[in-house]
Length: 293
Image (tube, rainbow, N blue to C red):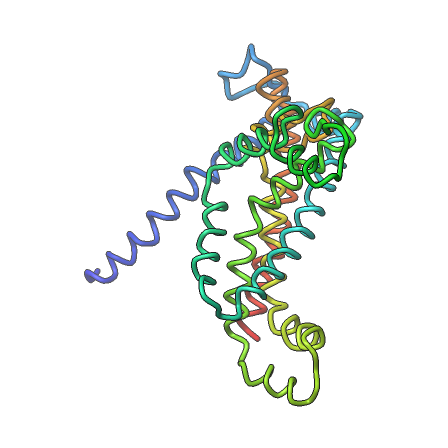
């Protein structure tokens, strides 16, 4: 075996070991727990009573699970629309060079680099009922007459969570879409302008078709990110009030490590993992289609 072959061997073995050890084994162990009766008393043993799909049936029959699943769907859809929409608008705005455009783009990306717990804590202060910045600004603008309980009213707490998470994730969408915008030849816009096409028509008939593969990829990444959301929600609402902002990852954690129903918690986690895995397959297929185009 030559030196290059040995180097290539280790370049393959090291990442595969990482993937199997830190991703594959936990997923397999969670799948095993989802078909077993796992309680706090037998958590330390590997061979536990086999219950088949009972844990999945128990979770699916729980009205709280159905509420959490609906919350998750609303959360994913709102983040998908908000992050893609705002990301596209901001990316299109920053694609035209002007003084400070690069600096603004970098500052926006800083918000995505921040830890989710920090973002959730900051927005929790901003949404505070008595001293929050959001209510202060709305009062100053004359939009509201009395303070809004953003995080303690079940009717609007999901709105507050979506605003915070869209603000957190939008810069990532923006930077990917902005990268796709740079690949569009400027001659297309110039030719369209000469033919009398306005900004809206140029955006609809040149920009959107050109960045469609990038937008599809961004949509898949946003869905995966929203389905895995945990830290921002824990810091901001902890799933409350009355589970109005509870989602599948947080519900799986609460079931396992608060109620100590590890088997049912693993079943909920497996369901969330299956959704993420399906979206990841769509993402990989989108990337392959883009590369072969």
